[in-house]
Image (cartoon, rainbow, N blue to C red; front, top):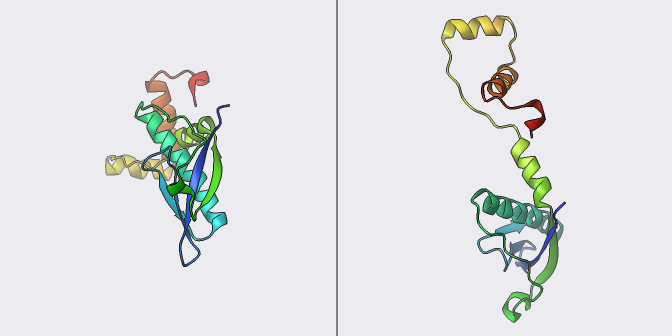
Length: 137
């Protein structure tokens, strides 16, 4: 299992919340109402950022160990470890909604038979796309 640890910069605000950014992951930002929540949000933000880079076939930045004085002064620095393989598996297997259209008469018959549309469509797509049972994610 692949693990990546990036240094996160937590900038405190006057209200007790924290803005979060990662110098090694440009554009990866988040916020938390307190340090504990900010730490959780940092993991989620970095995981999603790396996942998006993977989906776009972009290079995953190598974590660095040095930060500039600008990043460290007055801020909280925390190592954040993410597990891209586990996050990818979670995202690839989460259920998403999709709309379909059916003739009204067919929908009525299916509802009378208490058809589980999601399960039926999933099985039909697996068969139609000829996905072997072992090929499921």
